[in-house]
Each structure stands twice: as structure tokens, then as C-alpha cells.
Image (cartoon, rainbow, N blue to C red):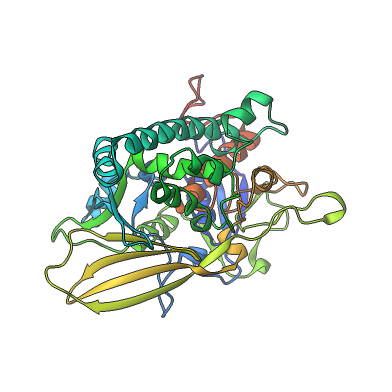
Length: 412
């Protein structure tokens, strides 16, 4: 990334969210002067822990490539940065799914192991249907990447583009194709986990399971002891990177310049339609808690994730050995409440389509949990990357997207 091309440009990033931090360090590395307006919020937004607040980050890292790309594009390579902090990533143990009738499914992320686990639990025909459905969801993920995740979403989608993202199907309809109630419950539970009220959520949410199968799930590990670490340590790396890239962090708007060259709003936003009518609702956020329990026998390897499927919603728990105790992070979706900082509820295809565009009518760019990418941590990182590519090109004329193969401006 060039520093000379961006000389003299100032960008203000509003919001201490994960997307805001990621965008700020990318923009600074690209040579812009960057001011991060936190408005007094903790760095990391609702993912930040500490001071008695539970670490709400999922303790299993999904789509690690989003984290790898961010650290590589803003300074040291991901593996180098982890090694400098005596950290590494290791494949996470299989996720344990528990059902109301007492059945149990231990679901690995790796494709072959996943097929055998489903076949052992529910029979080979069910495993074949599961594998086929996730293959199709993988194709939907490729389409979504071109329609708002890695490229700006076009103002209108063609009929073929809508078909490619399962626009006419709900999560419940897709789950019914499995013809196995327990596997169907695994699919429909993705709705409340993503912040939607029920299975009428768009079928494209199944891409989350396809992403896990394709890219794996990972635990952060202490490289010296082999002990699993809280995911919040990844957030610590990003906060440290803010200082390395000389991002100016301000708690009050009074310290910000009056006329920056560009502004990025990294706070979740609810879009409005005709006559100011709200076109989307805040995501349903789980009740997050943290507890420390004594070990029962040998500590589990890695961070064990359990999903209890209840009629009122799933309960997701991560258990991490921490010295003499096991730390338990719980996301209880049975008592979820609307919270704007968790993004927008993907209640239907239309609600996904109504998500705010990359640039608003006020001229500000946007990247947040409200973006078309979604509200997962990796989705916030991808929304930030997309906004940075567009901002940098608008200010300098230089395309710094990783897929760009054309001539580049000289590097500083």
C-alpha cells in the first residue's frame, strides 16, 4: 500500500467497534492520517470484555482468513504477530449438539470427518443430504462475496443473482430438505444465533455452516504451554496495532477536524425507507454470561463448544480450561433482546436486502455489524476491508484490492 499517494489525506472513523478498529489500522497503513472517534466507548465495542463485563466474543475463531488478512495488510504477518505474543491457532474440537430428546451429535468442522459423524448419528442417506446441502450453501457464499461482502452490493440484483443467494427460500424451507429433524434443528438454530427471530430467516444464513466446513474452526493457543486462550487476546492485538500505525484515538468529537477528506461510520445503523420508515430491526442479542467452574476430571483439550437446542432457542457454551478452573462463556438465545450494537436482524430476505449501502446519503462510508456481510466478528472485519478499499480508491485513484492485477502506484 502506498503512503505517498495518500499524503495529506485525513480520514475520521466513527465508532470503537471491531469494524472501526480494523478500518482505522488499514487506512493508516495505506498512508492516511486516521482519527478514531470512540465517543467514550471501549475499544472493541460490544465485543470488548474486562471490568466485570463478560468477553462476548465467540471463543471459537471462524473464517480465520479475515483476521490473517487484516494483520498482514496492516503490518506484520498473522503468524509472525501470533508468534511474537507466544500464540498460535489450532483446530477446535468438534462442536457438541444436544437435542431435547436426548440425542447428541458431535460435529467436526473437517468435511470428511463431518460426513462420518452425521452418518454415524443419523445414517448415511442423511449424511449425503447434509453434505449436498452444504455444498450448495458454499456456492451461495461465493455469490454473497460478490454481492456486498467483498464488492459493493449493486443497487438492484438480477434474477440470476437472486437465485444464486437463495432469495426465494427461508432457512426452514432449506432445512426441510434434510428430512432429518435433528439436522434440521441444527440449521434452523442458525436464525437465532444470527440474531433473527425464527426460521423464516433467509436461507443464505446456512453459509455460516458452509464457511465452518470449508475453512475450519480454530482455538487460540499459548504456544509455550499449549493452553487455550480467550479470543479477546485477538482484540488486544488489534488495539496494539492502532498504536503501531499511529492512529489518533479520541474520546470526544471536539478533538476531530471539521472537514476531513473522508468519514467512515463504523457504528451499527438502522436503515430507513420511504418517509423515514424503518426497514430493519436490531438483531436479537443473546444474554451473555461468564462463570468459572471447578474441573471435573481431566481438563478438555482446546475450547469445547456445546450447542443446546431448545424450543425457545439455542444456548451456546464455550468451556476453556483456565488454571484450576474451567471458564464458561454462555450465549443464551432463549432470552435474547433487540440490541442495535449486534447489528440488524436477518429476519427475511427483504430485511437482508434492506441493509444500508456502502455509502450513505450523507456521504459517509459505512462498515459495521449492520453490513450485508453480517454481524459475526469476521463479517465486521470484511466490511471494514471493503470500505477501506473504496475510500482509498476514491481519495487516491489507487485500487488496493487483493484481486487487483493492474498496475499499481509505486510503493513507499
